[in-house]
Length: 240
View 1 (cartoon, rainbow, N blue to C red):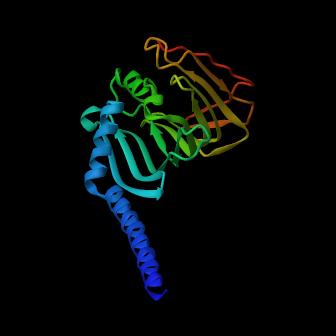
View 2 (cartoon, one colour):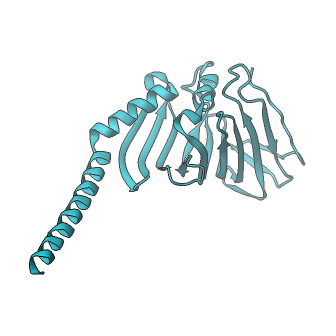
C-alpha cells in the first residue's frame, strides 16, 4: 500500500512538472526575440510595408499580446500606423476564427512625406488581402484615432470604435463610429460603413458611406479655418 502511494505521488509530481515545464517553455518561446523577428518579417511580407514589433507575449493559451506595432511607408519615410497594444485571440469566436483587438491605434494619413502613390499603396496594404488566409474573422478597434497631420491642415477623428467582420471568403464589412473631431465632442457619433472585397483589386472598396449628423462648428486644425458639417452627408465612394 505504501509503495503504491509513493508511486502515485511520484506520478503526480512528474505530471505537474511536465505541465509546468511545458508552460514555461511555451512562454519562453513566444517571448523570444527569434519568434518576434519571425512575426515581424511575416507582417512586413503580408502588408508590403516595413513593420516593427517591439515584443510578443502569451496572453492566454490561445492568444498573444503584441506590443508597440508600427507600420511605415517604404524607405520609412513616414509612420502610417502605430498601435501600443494588440491582442491576437484565436479563442474569441465560436466558429474558431481569430479576433484581432487593436487598442488605441493611430492611423496617420497624408503628411508632407507622402507621395502621390502612397495613398493607394496604404489602402491596398490595409485592405487588399484575403484575411481568411490568416483565419481572421473579426478586427475590433478600441479608441482608435485617424489623423491627417499636415502643417497647413490638420484633422483628427478620435474615439473611433467598431468592428470589421470577414466571411470565409475574406469579404469584409466595417462599421465604425467616432465621437470627437479635432478634440470637439459630437452629440451624435459620426458613422462609417464600408464593404471590402479583396477578390476585386480594381474595386476592393465597392461601398463607403459616411454619416455626419448636424452639429456645432468644427475646428479643422488651422487657426483661420473652420467649417460647419452638413445636416446628413452620405458619401458613397469607389476605389478606382
